[in-house]
Image (cartoon, rainbow, N blue to C red):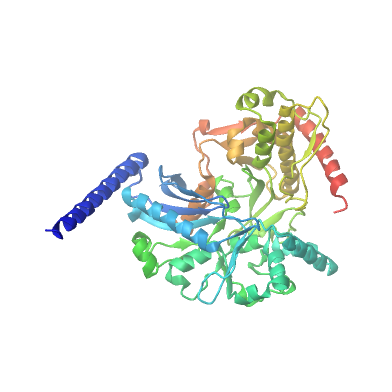
Length: 553
């Protein structure tokens, strides 16, 4: 009896736990079914999109509801906020892998609960660019993940050294034109040269360099049994080491930075599938056992496709924390054309390249000015629009985080000129927002000749979706009508879903470029001629200030 009672109690507790767990599972399934309304997606192809960002890791599911139109399945978005990149601009590959796997666990749980797992047709990755990590012969990580945010002073030093070496050979402009990228700490050549000069033992341990997506697919599937997967054109091009016209590693640059070409992986188009989960992950995600996985596409390229900017007829402008202006061109269009000075050009597929420029700061300027000046929502709603373009008399260089395109001065800082005792907080904020619009105008002037003459400008990003005033500033700066697809959500992930659909032959890329038929889903910003003239003058003043401060750099 003394033994029986504890066993009975333990058995009762176990039964209660099992009952409680089952009830929780049933409640979760009922909840997500109500949220997702899965019956509308029955029988439709479904893809899983994994977005590895610098501040969060996300996974979402999209269904192909009509020709080339992918819709986010309500309730499918799984997200984990993580600060992936440390103070050195590097990340921990093992931590990223664990986070992605946990997010995929939750995604698969959602798909099982909604009974949509059986129509899964593909899994793809969108990743921050650039990213590269070293693995040994067994495929184990032996380096940090080196990223676009490289902040080591030594990396900046070696970037400068590499610039000087190329300039001494008369090859600096030629290297930019071959790879489509400048020599800068944001790209791999400076990091690899630093490793060669300062940490050769680290390089010695590396059997192959991999991207985040290549490492994960290699870890999960039987395709990684040889210890190495290829790298996609998109990921390789963002490293700054790919001859983007020939779609192969740039041998001259590799030699100059001391990197053994045998350590570089093969490069392939993102459309190449990898399937066949290994035994460990087949038990974890049985529904994905034979589903194809696709190598990563950079977040910028996916954002363009998701904004329906799929060719030279549309230019994408995005403002989130940072900002960018980009256009998709045919590879043939850049076959003989030079990459405009100050811009970049990345290979994003067999037949397409992405030409554009990026600003280190965008929405971050708005956030900094608003918080520093302690402006309330009431201040913004009633006062910001009342300030006439450029009438504040301020000239701002918005380099809170250094400059990327077009000058690529990583040590540039934010500068405000023209302050007097009558300058108001609202005028400071307005001038900061205008300064971003003016820098986008500079990029547009460099890029516009490569796009169609009548190209449409399509805007996206949290900052522009939430601020009609900022959209109007950009329309006035460019002198172009802007289009915002107000109903669009998760455009980067939607872009990747579209690309996966093209890889699987479900539709063409061209078919994905149609905007919604309902005009209510599109919002337009029309340029004002007087404001455009004022902003052209302001851009000239901004350029004068820039040259005064940085002409010697």
